[in-house]
Length: 248
Image (cartoon, rainbow, N blue to C red; front, top):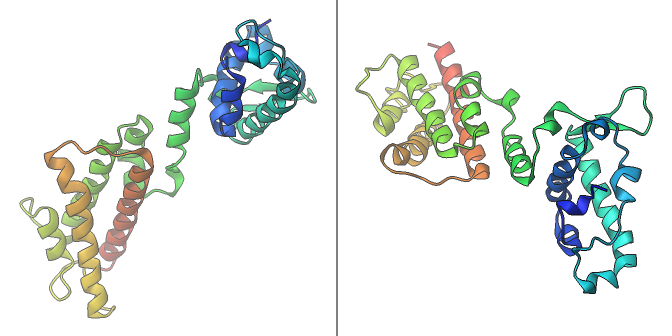
């Protein structure tokens, strides 16, 4: 009988994993089931109660079977609850107690697939500036984080140039300081104190100088979490540009 331990050979490893990590193995197992089982799954009877001693387990695990029969089902149920909450499995309509693998869940063939989706979920598309959502979100989804960050701040630069009516030769940090100069900047907000106008100029210039310019000249390794923070900043800056443009 196909067992969850065909994908998790070590019970101690299973118990060390967080629910969202163990969930990747659960989905690998579920998506490996025969077709006639994948649409009608009961977590209690389907895999939680299928804890037996695989032949592949080292002898020292055999003496701990009573422990594992108590702890592993709990860990698997924690993973199952996470999968249901995240929409990878869902209740089968009209079949109380039974679940099916959702379209989202069918894309998970292993822990790497689940990790990619988890990282994509870090950047909710619906809260992004429309330009960022269109130009950047798909890059992030593919895991191309450095390109996504570069593109996000490129859109900020383009938006500032277009909103302020500056020349194509106005670029980067110099453009930001010109556009948001506390006295002469076309995008500066004269209704706020001078110190705040200076701070906005520093904010835009610093962001472009730190997050766009370096990636124009060399490869920069960026993880998913840092990329999210940078892209969200670019989205915020674009909204400021929109607000200033409306007042011109």
